[in-house]
Image (cartoon, helix red, strand yellow):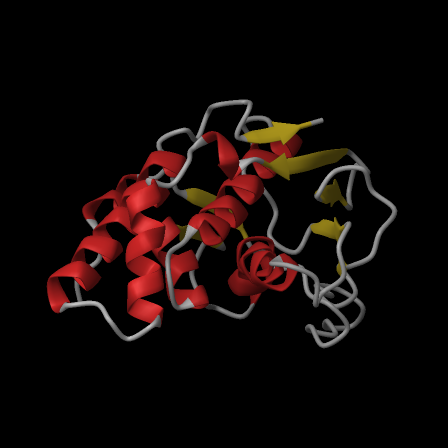
Length: 199
């Protein structure tokens, strides 16, 4: 199985999951996630998947400021409804990285390690997503602006040919390379405050 090289060049996210430690999933409860993990969950790599990963990374860095984030210790609210736009895709990746879940999530053990009802939609927010630490109440709001890294116009032309069943094999490969080139350029802007705006 081969992925583009840049997938593993993206800054990784390490979290501490006390439930994983308690249940023996690993000895210290620390879990490292990469952009490749987000791609595996989504089944594809695109600007939305990249944005979900980056928004979560930047939110956790802001909330924990040099400390290891606590998986299961963050509540997340979305401005959009679950079925609006790409909110559901983003929420799946946020859930992977933070442990938060909607009503179908883990119910906990003796009132501890509860993961359900930590992921909400249709919240009255100005920004896209709000992350909140459950121990301190600290919050950070984030919005993602992939438009600052535009797609080459020729790539959309190739996509139209593919969807119309008119593309040759070489054109399909050219499209895939062009599509992932934009994702790469987005991820290279990881620390650009205009890409993921935190407030």
